[in-house]
Image 1 (cartoon, rainbow, N blue to C red):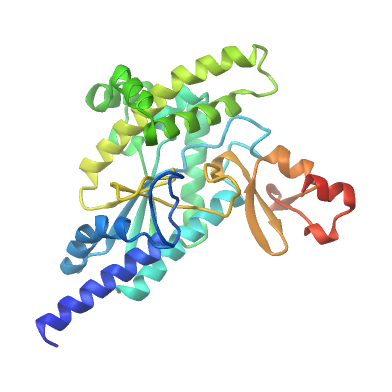
Image 2: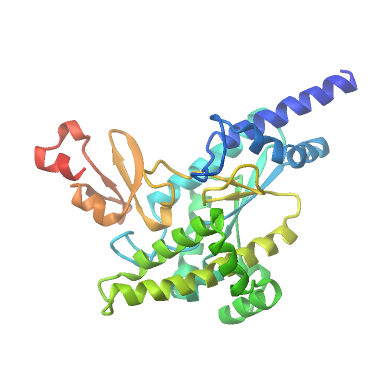
Length: 328
């Protein structure tokens, strides 16, 4: 085969790999992406993927995600991963398998669990983060997701106390909150991210045990959101140093042709909803994500797997009584 034919094959494979990933793209609502597969987003990542394929190495993806379950029992079943996470992990592993069909060296995704990064800000105890991380590791092994691996802040600062890990991260990579406020005031993606994080923090903290006013909690969450954004950016910068050749994925919607590709982990009516803020609901043989309280209000029945609560089952709308259809 001539060198020109090899180059063409590499180029076609590079495009097909990115088409496979971008088919599941989570887009910013005003991100300017066009078409089912955005060509501008594809072109932005072509050089990185092409360079990896020319080396004959597996394509690396980094996904900061799977932090910890929401502390609000109205949203999730427990602090441990369940079917919602399993479905997402199976999807990510299958994505790598499809890439391997196109490019035999394949792909791998480093799931960079960020719960330890900001657990002190979102009201999740570190012991819950630890249990969640171990649950994700066991789940990856159990389902045979050989293309996935878990990476955490514990792997960076081995042996340090959890609070000390966060202090070192802040000192080396943290962002000035005044600068973040200016970015948010300018609007665009920064404002959307700030609003999304604030909304989720407010929902997470409005637990049955909260006794204050919603207005006071909202003010607190608005302030803490800047801390979450700063830590998230710091974690991202650190990962950029540790995984210099990786394509960056994100569970948040992304603007067109930026350094991150937003990716949908599951079918959900809310593009911000994630497996760790929801429960899996099966209906008619397919799964979606819903908040626990909404699933129960719709009449979904809890399903146990190996003696543990795992997901909900909801009869298709045609099988529901009239009063149930109103809730579904």
